[in-house]
Image 1: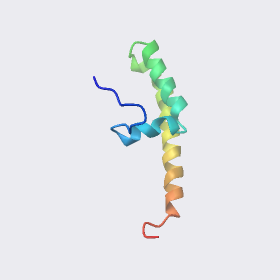
Image 2: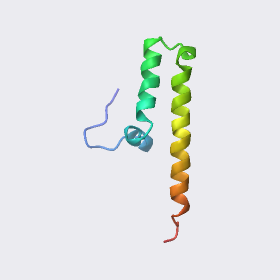
Image 3: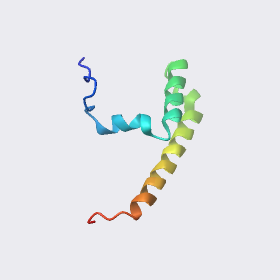
Image 4: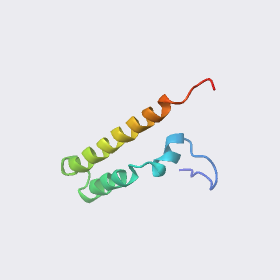
Length: 73
């Protein structure tokens, strides 16, 4: 498997922004839970719900910010 050279852009733009997300800690908590419980998703539902709510708030904030931006200015 080939790795991305240091300083090069990742193949998927969203991958570069994941660590910048306000929800990164909830995301990593979800992954750690899955690792701990050997992918038994039912034991991690609370982590998933917290992450989902965070992403929802993040999206709403982004949409609100974008309302004031013009595509043609």
